[in-house]
Length: 381
Image (cartoon, rainbow, N blue to C red; front, side, top):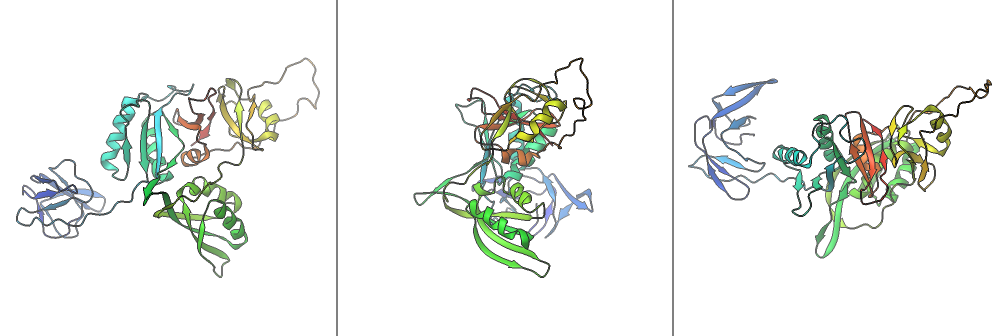
């Protein structure tokens, strides 16, 4: 907390004015400040000091601590509302339970409720009649990805849905969050960037180019249009684009925004990939797996070069014979497989797919369980 006026002293009894107009009376047990990176105990704290105190539970942003003789409440700090939500479930992929320790919905629920105490911008929705999933809302893909990554490192095995934009009804109209986006890119790629942002319903606010040949542009873009946007812009600009965004306002729905442009390559059986199969399948598209990776039936193992999905056998071994020639025994040269970060993985999937976090080195993107055939994507992090 930050002291605004007056002094905080230990063993003194101020009041707590909370944002819901509840007044609690308590005694400060301990005040801790900082000297460099070291935490030190203080007897009192003055104006401008950033300290931690003990003695009161359930304190949140916007609460006012004051003396009994001066019960004036300060204006609360406004917190940005969540713009995206995801469903978190237990990991149901065939790789479930290989390395993780926290596998049940009960443990996942406890972890999320504990996170809510420290992460005040996070919203947790636990439906009464639904026991297989918990809806978590945050301020963007990165905000949610940080939570999932933290849970992954704590040996949780979870399945995550595609992020959904939070829609509000304002004056009888359905409205979606709009973000202010700033982009810097070499001017030779500015045309491609502007075209891509237009496809995502972006409205240009300004454009200028400096003496170094760098174009700076500002857009107002629906949050829906920003999902997976950075990866596409990096491809168009050969990795030279810089993009930042911040929530701006809610506005009426902007209409349909196209999703993934290409289909996926789906494994037809369970097994282990090999170089022979990967070599023959490279011409079909971009692979997400490399030789000796474990796969299972329905797993997404690559991205098709066309719009449709394609079922393939990435575990097919080379048929062995007694006949040998220099042509048949040629070296296998493979293109490096495509890998995903957690944020990229949840942006890549479609509505009927899931990100299944099954161990400390991989992610899976799986088809929704309501669909007859499960689909998963192996993504290294």
